[in-house]
Amino acid sequence: MLDSSRVPGWIYHLVDKLTSCSAIEPLLFVLRKDLKVIGGSERGPVLYRSWVAFDRWIRQPRTDALRKRDCCSLLGSRSLSLVPLQTRGTTTLLDGDVARIKAGNLDLLLYLGRNIPGVELSACATLGALSVQNGTTAVPEQFWDMYEGNRVSLHGPQIVEQKQGRTRVIYRASTSTGVLSLALNQDAAYWDIARVLVTQLSGTERQRMEVPLCSEANAGEPEIHRTLGNMPMMRFLVQWTMRIVRNELMKRLFRDQWSIVLQTKGNLPKVIDQDFKIMRPPRDRFYADPFLIERNGRSYLFFEDYRFSSQKGLISCCELDSEGNYTEPRVVLERKYHLSYPFLFAWQGETYMIPETRHNGTIEVYRASDFPYSWVREAVLMSDVEATDSTLLQHQDKWWLFTAGVLDHAAPEKTLCLFFADSPWGPWSAHPKNPIVSDACHARPAGCLYFEDGRLIRPGQDCSKGYGYAVELHRVDVLSETDYRETLVASITPDRIPGSRGIHTVNQNAQYRVLDCKFLISRFGLSLFSASQRSKAEFSNSFAFESVKSSR
Image (tube, rainbow, N blue to C red; front, side, top):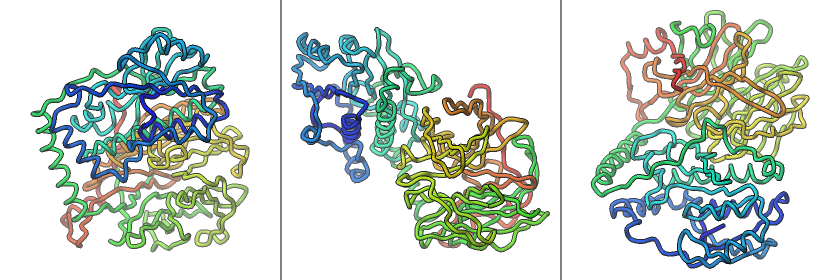
């Protein structure tokens, strides 16, 4: 049910996907006419409206979710039952309109209008109504995330279920909050909502079984709506301007550079104070995504070798000795497209690598023809996918493939998908609960799964404070072909390494633990730290394993 035939891009996409789905027959497509214009008292303060207009004008090419499109263009190619309604207000339907909706014998009513649907609407469908809500005032709830400085959305758009007089929030958009643009935050959140609805409603079985759209941990009560005046908006604009200036200065004067931290191995997360070494790259590149593998009693380190000039990653390798010293890195794999995250595994006497090849739209497997410096492409596990950080696990007589970005390639840190097969070559079956994780705090893979004290641990990237902020370690409680559950047990944070701004990959073998840390370097060759600070950072400290507090 729509307010008008002209809708934002995310609704157009949603209607397009659902009306072309064979599992939905038929879709009753309802247009509400004569919707009243929003009154002046509901338009928000003038400073807010001016800022929003400026923000959307600046970000216009990047906000497809908000750009208006006409759904009438879909009618010619779809067999839709179109029922126009006449309303006498913004929230109340005529009795004849309610009768027309009931005559459609709906299983589920998806309400995509501006207002909150009334009880009479939810009673028109067997399974009730789903609606997307982001506040009933002119100031969207997402604005308050920027206003309060929340790094993860707490007030974003949410999917609300209404059934048999009961109302509950069953999904809230899980996105990182950008501090510079409301339009970009809305864009990310509404694409997330559209993805969830398409995934959950495109299968008849899911509708009949009433599978929840999210875990109870993400559910909550609707937000209490607040008012915004010109004075609070003026204070916000001062803060927002300072953020813009700081961001522009940082972009022009500095850049992020990832380096590899090497530490002798202890039990995760028990060992805190041990020496480590930092493998710093030349200034024209960064080293990230470190992976370890043992071969003939020797340890080898593989990693992404990213060149700033070409904006493309290669895979390089070096050998580690018993004291943690490393040989000169050497490029072992290069393609026309970007490579990163060189996941390694051994099988049937051969050594294989699955680098991230999302820019080629594939998940590729390479075999070591002359380990470690020569590799040939052995197989393509999946095509036409923008999969990120694919990670394999052999467990319980199955092969499990964890990968991000399949459902939301624009923001792979938001969702994690799982596939399973009888061999590493497939064929791969999608897990029925995909995405198994929908949370920017830990969805994206951050290294190999491993066992500790009999528990299976999955590292995931915490992007709640920006890409690659930290790594969260999750205990896998249930891993089967029908279910998946995990529990947060610890976080690896960058605060104990002087100058570090992030960590996003951790791996280990019998001797070593490796992780990557993000540092800020000058674009003009200026040193940011004294020699004593650099020495301390490289040789005398350790990274933090922050235990999870009971409040989390």
